[in-house]
Image (cartoon, rainbow, N blue to C red):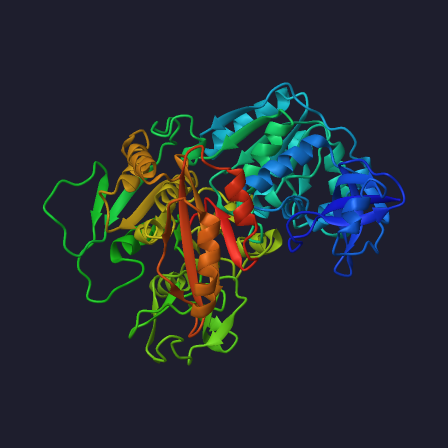
Length: 620
C-alpha cells in the first residue's frame, strides 16, 4: 500500500496537496481521478511513498486515509507541468486551480491524457513581434506557416475570428477549437488538434490543448481583453502561452496593430506600417480656444440647441455618403440606450450585487429596464437608489440603442442594422443580421465587439466609419484606455475608406497617433507615464479586491495587510455596491523584476477565497 499526495484540478480546492492511498506505486506527474467533496476530479500526483516510509507522518496526522486512488488517467509531460507551475506562480494561484483553468473541463473530458506521450521540444525559445495591419499579418502568417516544419497554433481572442482566419488560411486545412463545438464534434476536433501537423486555430480556452508536434505559437490580436479568464484564478492566457512556449522551447509570435507596449521591441518606436486612410476629426467642444489645430482635417461642430448623440456634422457626412449610394459603419462605446445609470442626489451608479454597472435599455421584456451588459441581471426602472433611497436616477452616456434611434429618425430611407450583443451571439446570427450589410445606402450601428463578426462575415469595406464619441473610449476606467483607443481606431481604418472621430480632445496625443501614425509622441508619452508609475512593462500591478460589509472588510484588512508585508500599496476608496455591501481594493505596484516573489506568492495564495487576486489588471 502506498500514500499518494495529489494536487486536484479544482478551482475551489485548498492550497497544497490532498493525501490518498493507492494499491500501486505511482510516479510523479501521473494524472489520476480522485474523490473530492463527493465528486470525481482529475489530479496530479506529486509524491508517492510506501505506508512504511510514511508511517511517522500518518501516525501524527489529523485525518484517516479512507479513499483510494481509483483510476490512472495518464501522465502530464514535464514541460507542461513546468509551464503550469510557472503560470500559477505568476498569477498567485495554486497549481491545481491553474491546471483546472488551463485544461478546461472539455479538454479533460474529451481528450485522453493517456495518449499524450512525449511532446516535441524545440531547440530554443524565441519571441517575435508582428506589428502590421491585418491584411499584412495575414500575408506574413501564411509565409510562416508554409515554412514551419512543425505545427503552428494560431490563438485568436473570439469565436468570430476563428471563422475569419479559417477562411484566409484555408489552404492549410486548419483544425478549429472553440466553444462553438459541442459533443462529438468537439471530441473529434481535440483529438485531431493533438495529432495535427499543419495548423490549429484556437480560442484562448482551448489554447493549452496538448499538440504533439507544436513548433510555433501565434497570439493574434494580442491587445484584446478577452485573453484573461473571467473566472478564478483569472489567468491571462497570453502569459500562460508564453510560459508554455518557453517550457517547450518554441517560437512565440505576438501580432496586433499596434501591439501592447510590453510586446513592442521598442515601446517608443513609431508605427511603420500604417495603411493609407482619410481620418478627420470633429471638434465637439462648445467653446474652442484660439490656437492652432492639429495637422489634420478638423471639422467644426457648431452650438446646437438640442444635444444629439450623433452631431449634425456627422449627420451631414452620413447624408453625403448615402446620397452617393455608400455604406456607413457607426460605433458607440456601450450596449443599451445609456451605458450607466447615476443617482442625481448622491452620485452613486446603479450596480448589481457583484458591482457590475447597470445600463439603461428601452428594450426590456416589459419596456424600459436597467440591466447588466451580459443581460444576466434585469430590473424595472421604478427602483430607488441603493445608497440614499432617492428615486432620481438618470441614464448617462451614449449607447447603441440611442445612436440607432437617432439614425433611424434622421435617415428613414436608409437600411439601419444594429449589431451588438443583444442582436448577435453566434456566427449564424451575425450572417443573418448582416445579410443586407452590402446593400447601398445601409448603416451599421454597433460596438467594438461587432468588428470581429463583421470581418468574419466577409462584409465589403465601408465608405464611411464614425466613432461617435472618442472621448468615451479615452475616458474608460482602464489604464490602457488610450492604447486601446489607438488600436480600435486603426482597426476601423482598415475597414473603411474614411474615418471620422468625434472628440473634445483633438490635441490628445492618442488622437494624433491615429491621424499621424508615423509620429512617436503618443508612444513616448505613454512610455514615460508607465515608467514613472511602474505600470507594465516597467513593473507589475497586483490588485486585491474584497467585497463584504464594512465590518467584514475591516476584519479582512489586517489579513490582507499582513499578506502584503513591507511592499508599498494603495487602498482605493471603498465603493458602495448596495446599502450594506462595499468593495475595497488594494493595489501593489512592484518594480520590474520583483515579481514573481515566492514569499509574497505564498502569502497571497493563503488569503481567504473571498479576496480576488488579479495580476496586471486593466482596471481596479
